[in-house]
Image 1 (tube, rainbow, N blue to C red):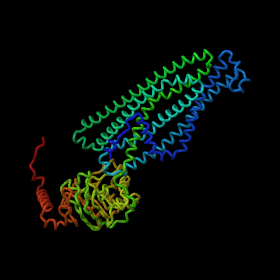
Image 2 (image 1 turned 90 degrees about the vertical axis):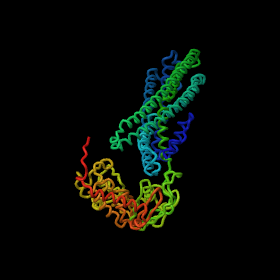
Image 3 (image 1 turned 180 degrees about the horizontal axis):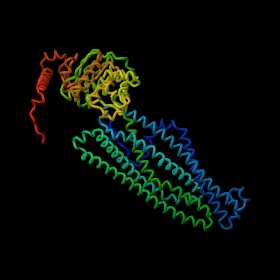
Image 4 (image 1 turned 45 degrees about the vertical axis):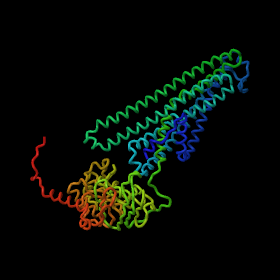
Length: 627
């Protein structure tokens, strides 16, 4: 649930980033292992790069100690084979070694970066696909509380940030950290006194970095939440643009977006401020350490305790070893943001669907269409029940009309039949078997549904119909379209069945959208059909065409019709009158009229209104001048 996601406790200590990455790596370790060859190459490259950095200053040391310094020639070189060559030859060899060390470093870095880039791209692609698929399977109770824009941000931006930071921050940080450890070891080997002096500033650095990194992590997480809120606001406004413009809500929604946008930018500025503060602190500490080491190092050289080359190598190592500390602020800011993004992704993947296949579930056989509800109790929240002890049975091929006032539980009832939710108490049976005995996908594949506002996808007309039964042939698609009275107007479209629809089918009229939705239901050839106010809002001509198509669609099928128009319920085999989640009346139209209670009273009122409307004509209406 999204509320659970937002309330989940987060690490509040300085170890937050480490704990977060451990959680992320643990969750995605199976995907990481698949790329072990490329990751191994990346590690070999990293080690080669570190080795090259260790070797880089040594040719300079030899040049200083054995060529530049007076009387250097009288001292033997540490490599005996070089003692018998001239100074020019030695200088040439050492300068070539400098180039080779740099080339080794560049080649190793290239191999590491390319291998890691390919591996990380593959891993991220797998994670994104896994996240998208998991979102598709999460229960409606989750999606009813989550915001679409925030979920899209997690799929696109949060995943991208993981890949980007792996290359731009995590790898350099690993390289620099390992280089630091290696060089500190060599520094102690060369001169323990100078190494100890150089490391005196590290406790101050650790304290400062710990405090600021914790703040960066917290601000980064808050920023990701704000970005999700902005995406949600934009998504909702764009999806409902017609309503937004009709109600003149542009200014209000723009204000909400601007507020989140401003706060997000403030978080960015705060992160940059903290990062800059850490970098400046590190620079001062590095300068202090370098000055103290240089002061003591020069004394050792002048007293003969070290050579100029030793001091040169030592200062080079000291400068290089402090490089990761200088960049740590920038890298930690990026890594903290990536940690926040990664945790948001893991939060989704760790959310368990409420509706899922139980252990031992089987693929549903072809349904005959017998449906039974037995003492079904349901509420979207356990403390607030919507349906109270519903019990009824429907025989194969029967037509059932669900009528009653809005909010009575009609749509909730059919949602339970589709197993979009599970009852809190009671059972639902199809052909004598509890729904939970079947695999969810195999159950829903045998139920067709036509809604009041059927959603069409931004693909071709042919694909929209074929989505009802993946793998349907062109002949089956056209047959379904003919059954739905849709074939003629489809052929009149610019590209016929290959015409691309606008988003949600906005390029078609309401009646045309409904007939394509009916064709999509027909191609499924399901034995159970659910119709949820399928003709509401249509003009007489479209309503007649849609009603005719629905008659053909439901022929021989167990049909549940949700309707407020009791005229369409007259021919039903059963009518269930629901009010406040209870079946107050049940029977045929004739039986309920003889009963003379709620259904009969409502039917008589609707009949009287319809009769009055039929008697009125345009010329009977008074003239009203518009002002």
